[in-house]
Each structure stands twice: as structure tokens, then as C-alpha cells.
Image (cartoon, rainbow, N blue to C red; front, side, top):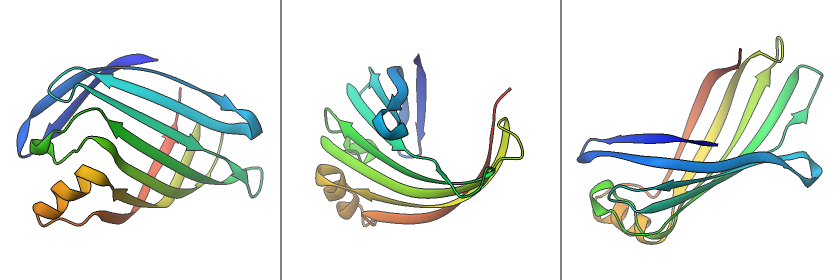
Length: 140
């Protein structure tokens, strides 16, 4: 995979970077992806994600997801520090009306670490956050 990532931030200039990565199936049917984002003021970032589909029925699927972000250098304007920046764990429950259309609801918990956690604490922000998510997974 290759593309461009554009980040907006309320306290810093926008950041546009090139993205390169891969996506595939690991042993035991884990879906894996890794993306490297290069360029801009934050020179390099690696985002690794793993997910697994647990079939409750043929159409009802529970999907645990784990994502980690590693950053090569500090970017204090965006409250991102070098090293392991954040880990996000979540569960999504989706119903596949067809393989091409599947609404979902879920719960996600995110935690920041290391220098990123220090920057969040200095700004008076929490180092962890939980949220409900909802959406539609589709392809055409």
C-alpha cells in the first residue's frame, strides 16, 4: 500500500506525509497491517495493527483490534513524543447484511506512553481515553 496522510491539529500547522505499508493475513487468521509515515516535521512514524474476526453467527462478528504507534522523534506542538507513543485496544460488533455492507458498534480504549504521556500530563490532559464508536463497513 502507498498513499498520503494529512493530519490537522488545532495548535500546530497541518502535517502531510507519505505512507507506505503492507496488509495481510498472519498465521491463525490474524489480519495484520503496518504503515510507515515519512516526511514533514515528524520524520517517521510506524503504525502496526492486528485484528481478528470471531464469528458468533454467519453474519454477526465480534472483532478485537489492537493498534500501536511508534514515533521516531518528538513533536511537542502536536503532543507526540519519541518512542512508543500510543496503544489502542477495542472491540467491534458488526452485522454483515452482505460482505459489502456491515454496520458496527464498538468500544475503544486508548493510552499514551513515554514522552507522549509526559507531554499530555504537562498540558493537563489525560493519558488514557475510552469511547464508543459506530459506523458502517462497506466496499464496492
